[in-house]
Length: 284
Image (tube, rainbow, N blue to C red; front, side, top):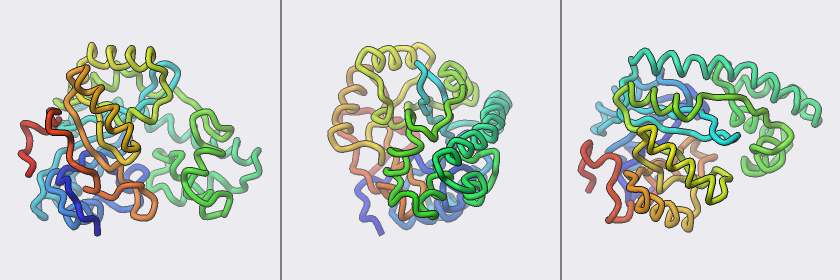
């Protein structure tokens, strides 16, 4: 069990996208780790939110319905988290369905590339990890590569095969940044830039990205995330101060033995930042 110093975790995944636990078990793990305010943010999917909310409420947590939307900006894939969304909003539902429909074709193309690189039965291997074939992702392929012994850990998989510029990756056009933010706002939510330290923007590109995000109505950025090294957490705290972003925190939990940070395992945000949950929950 994690000895948590942060009762807030607003980024996690279940079997409805690329996590290995179902929403009920993710909720139970969060509660076990002393999380008080929790969000399930599956990739391009909201079907797990009802199960997650019921379990979270039964366990005494405050639940924030969420989603992580795959987007394209500047020729790169970026992820935008929507928090406090209405999961029944038709504009959001239709937009997410369009993205999911693209994932299946992408998965088959990734499998073909991996076959050319000597990875046998890649598609079949990935699909067995995906509850919904329309949500097959690089993470599912990565789990198969580990199982089949092609790599020793997830980082090696992405460094060798599936990272943005690696030979097994397939780029597709997700939603635009404008679409992702507009769907979140239409659903009454707050748009959050997920794990900004993962994007390979230079300073000029990053400034342009942040400026456009704000102009479109985005309001928050993940400062603390399982994807960030300590120095990146400090850097994006300064970005939040510079741009006036609300600050979010989330483990980006996918699996007990796979994620760098367990649910609730991040430290508290710096005191001078305004949390994205400032009017949803008073953290201890």
